[in-house]
Length: 128
Image 1 (cartoon, rainbow, N blue to C red):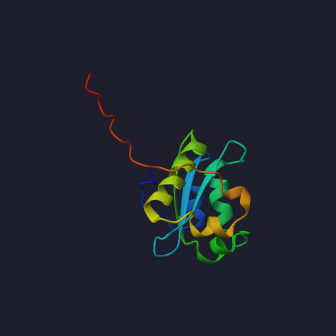
Image 2: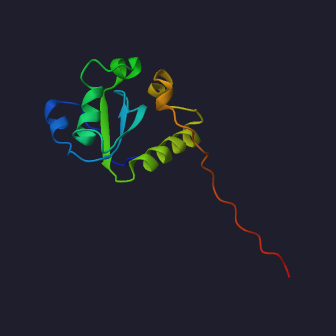
């Protein structure tokens, strides 16, 4: 469920190369540790390009991203809200932590109510 693309270093060229589409994105520190899972919806003027550029402009209101964000990757996805929730639930399951660091440092609007991912149990057949 996480984005399976290589990390991209932020630059004017790499930001301009992002298409103006909706989707999800991840931001990591220089070592590749995930800091943030975000989404860009239809209300963003240039979709993913706008949202990702905001995090690397030097004035991000989130202190964790402002100080540690070093790379990003993105995925165009029309189901961006559902995809982001799935990515956050997978983070919780795999990392054993509630939120990535930048989510913990952010405001309450960036911490949605999540369910829990778990493996499904086989249905037992009753002998009849």
